[in-house]
Amino acid sequence: HPYTFHLPPAHFARQLSGPVPLRTAPHPPAPPEHLLTRVLAVCLEHTAGITFSNGLSDPDAPPIVVRDLTGTIKSWIEIGAPDAARLHKASKVSPRVAVYVHKDPMMLLRAWSAATIHRADKLELYAMDRELLDELVRRLDRRVKFDLSVPDGELYIDIGGRSLSGSVAKLKLSTPAYRRCSVVVCAAW
Image (cartoon, rainbow, N blue to C red; front, side, top):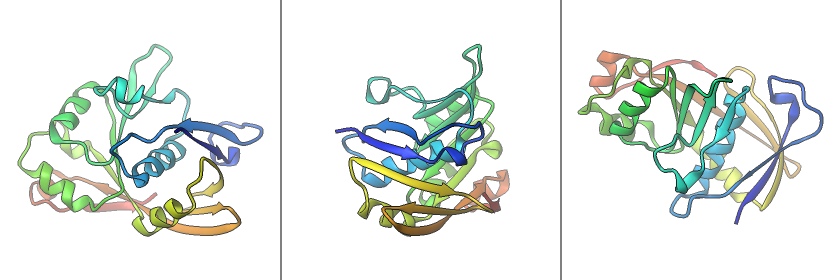
């Protein structure tokens, strides 16, 4: 069953009138945190040319992609816990690869540490606030309307008359730190 999110137009880079409807279906084995991370990633990454993939019918495509007017991939955006081989491929295809995680990012770093990932030092990792996601899951409905603002890496969400907040930590994998399975926090969003 698909979910419809009515997203705030004020957050997006281009001027839009009225809420932006976004229809998406959860992937069957994925938890609701995965769905919400995808929706928040689309909000945070929103730019011209951004789209969801065709989902399970095209498993090799990025979950979220940004293409220019010629169809060339500008950003490959993963959600969850992609394996190192997938990131290696993505880094060869796209000049920018970002991963939005809803679980412990250190788990991913341990999994990636022994693998070869093309341009690993350029990979962007964004860790979603797990408490915020838990609160959003409790309020998840088939039709969701929320307001979002993102000052200085802090997410402020008004959903169903309730104000929630949490952070998105932008982590950068530096080559030496990547090999030691640690991260360098570059900045809040």
